[in-house]
Length: 281
Image (cartoon, rainbow, N blue to C red; front, side, top):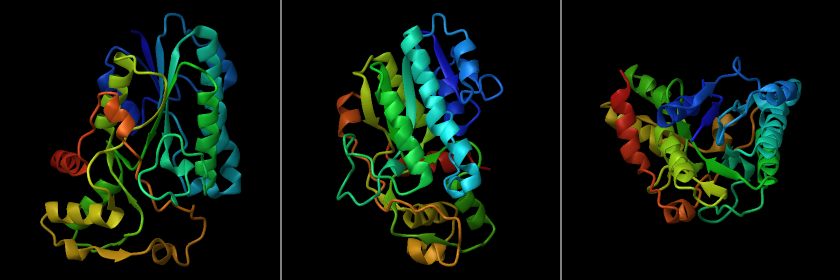
């Protein structure tokens, strides 16, 4: 199987490179997928699957009108370019999406077939990108949440604060599960290598859902601090007086029944958290 990883420099892209070590790995310098000419000119001969981890992910910055063109180029147009190439050259397309395509008002875990209802510019761009992917037959659309990998992320930030003796305020009314990039990449490989039916799959960490404040408290406890050093606040309280903030879905819990039935069982996010913390200096 010949695979190509697009967006190979990001935290998921790096994890995908480890799961698909023989894949052609392309960062933006290697292939700018927002450029239709570059995508058309790329040599897709013999490619079986393209794993698209490229995206605009700065949720708040996406709200600024000056960034709208760049957001749409990365999250919508680029996906369309890859989908067109998939149609022309016959490869399957794996595309990463987000729970931000929903408004967070659904009661209970969110199923794959819930209609999109985004709250933010970022969420709308991801929903529109999803539509480009699902318009072609040979696709796996992967929805995930709260990704943690190499580099800066919420877990590393909380660990740094704990180590520096800082006691943060963290929102307690946004509920979801952490997803570790390595586990996410492993699940994607499972779907591709086992030729799972094409379609949309939720793929996040497993286990009991929790709030961001719960995650922060778990990090603090693991670093030898008291969980009570994390002050729990509402999203409204946390962002009071701040401008340029994208609205967040309060329910980010995705239903994992379909991925379980496909034969992949993501790790419990608390187990993954401890393993990830063990890698931090």
